[in-house]
Length: 599
Ligand code: F6R
Image (cartoon, rainbow, N blue to C red; front, top):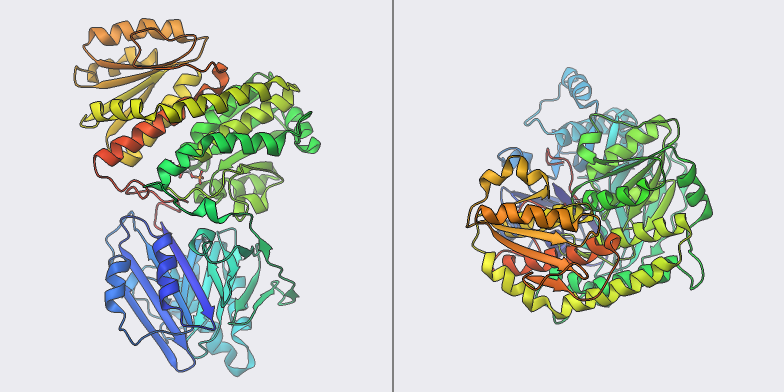
């Protein structure tokens, strides 16, 4: 899991690059590196540690107008400094940072070994650096650096976001992109290449999204983009619609709290976006495509997967097959049924690497994709056949909150459009009222949080829609508080897991799905017999006086995941604060999860 930032500027870049690196980092980053370049030479600093360690390594008097930097949390192996990016080629001709997965890396390595190259590490970056080095040497003065890079890139199979800096040149940074996150940003004084727009969005909203197959370079004055035949492509910057307010923390202590409390506005914005007052504003071609598909296949990860579970329930009512898959599973067992599937890929970031791998597999079948994402500057959004934006605004807290609200709201609007059911808008207006009620009553949730914050395990139960939201609530709790939590379908708890529940185990039960509430009340009796500490969270008209939290505003059961997700988000938030966790940057998670092997 990692991030990169490359900057060529009219001004000195050190502080700005390190600040961007801070925005890209994980809580547990264990390898960080930077290379400064000028026409006089290069200085590279690398540490097995985080940005604060890197800062100590960089001498006061070192700075420059060109720098390439990287930060990474390696999930799978102990780091050694030789492996820290940027990686230089054996002859110190080029430094590279490569994200992605190069399929033919071993073949390239063997070929280079036959040419006499020696390798210090097993890093794919070292192989790519030496491949470029080889073409620079082979081409000599007959080839420009761009031409040598292009030759190397032609040889690469797989997906990559490659950036390179030629040591003897020092005033340009080169790039090549295929199916891996990369965006180029123009600021007042610089051109920047990064995998994550958020790393520079405070400074500039002007972005250019290189298409797959693009190659080129940035200088201090311009961006040059070429196709693979080195024909220049016109590159126009687009202005992202993000406001200052959306990026600022304001009076909130954490982004997570701010983003939870944005939820009524997120629902309102989606109504305005997809309903014009009389009718829905979805593209008819998309609606026809969904209706004619014989199999809808949702694919996503984490919270987005949990939202897809709700989407699956909505779309199943159309009498067609609807499946939902975890992206990292579907990759290995790609499954569809029928002759005419439509794939719905949901991803807040639009850059989760497992989701993008699924996208590539689907493409190789010639399948069609609807992307639902919050990020227009993303590989998923740019590459899909049909696209729907979540309009939740930038989600800065690592734990996803408002994006989940937006995902379910959007899916319910889409569902309503497919049914041509305008009354859903009135139902969503009630959701906005209920969200405001939830926000006003947040201190009741804070009290429940303080009651259970020292528990070792927490269980969440529900049936139907309540089960979907139980799954999301347990994820939110475990990722932000590090308390072990489990979600079970209400009836399933009686098939074994009950053995884990004793009088110290809080069991949070959601009761809002009208077709399942009475069955769930029966299960509660069994769990209470075990002496469990049952906390009942219910919605009118199902609330009993003894329930711990009863939402007064009446909403449709199919919208209840939106509301009770917010209950789960507050609960996780208050417990995380109570336990002194790093709320906005929990350990072990980042805004867009890259390969488990650390790429
Ligand atoms: C949970 C969380 C993660 C993400 C998951 C997918 O709060 O943030 O589980 O939901 O990594 O991310 P996207 O939606 O960007 O594909």
